[in-house]
Length: 133
Image (cartoon, rainbow, N blue to C red):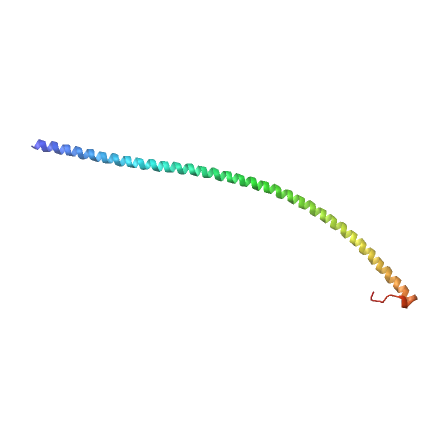
């Protein structure tokens, strides 16, 4: 009977050991499945990050191209504005000269009128213009 009990204990020990090994294997498989899921999620995140980075690069390249085009348009507009302002400035200088000549001519006429009026006052005071004119 002792031998029976011993062999039953041994079998029970073997069963327990097998059950523990089975449990460990099941736990290891669950951990492996979780790790594979995490790896898959990680790979998906890497792919999405890579796509987002490429998209951002494309957007930045477009923005740089647009800024370069805008800079060219601005420079062209500035050059046209400078040319026009130069033309306007030249016309203003010419107009100023014309006005200065006209003003000098008018001042000469005023001086001539004043002299003429002074002569009229001395010769025929009743024909002279009033002094305030």
